[in-house]
Amino acid sequence: MPTSTARVPKRGKRELEKYRRLLEQKKSELSDELAKARDAEEETTEESTQDIADKAVSSYTREFLYSLTDGERTVLLRIDEALNRIDDGTYGYCLNCNVQMSDKRLAAVPWTPHCVDCQELAEKGLLEG
Ligand SMILES: [Zn+2]
Image (cartoon, rainbow, N blue to C red; front, side, top):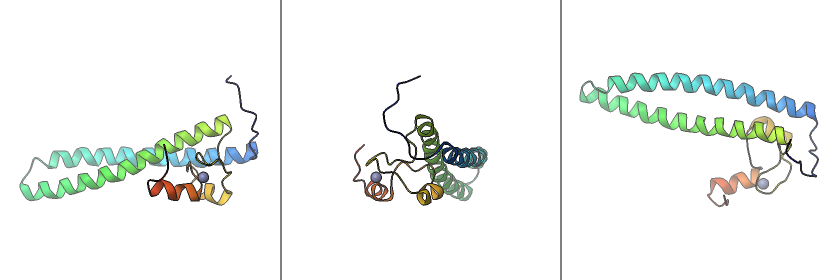
């Protein structure tokens, strides 16, 4: 076992398990959607060997699918990170400022690594790392 830090998480084990279930549920939903999107991508790739009009449509569809799956891949990654943080006892704390995030925020976006303030900075590209 790795040596743990002195900080004791304020959230109880039962509460953390609740978030773990939320995260795992979302993870399996997203995995299903990604698998479906991959199938659709393959279909549009085959269609793109047809005439020019069809090609334009399917390249649009492909772009849409790529942007969709990029977002979902990011969420999947964050879910895995959040699950790791549940294991090491740091879940629920903002990665940037270390503040304990509210239940409301975690219930809405259980995989979020940042509190509302830091999220805003991150979206503006003002967050380091
Ligand atoms: Zn923060």
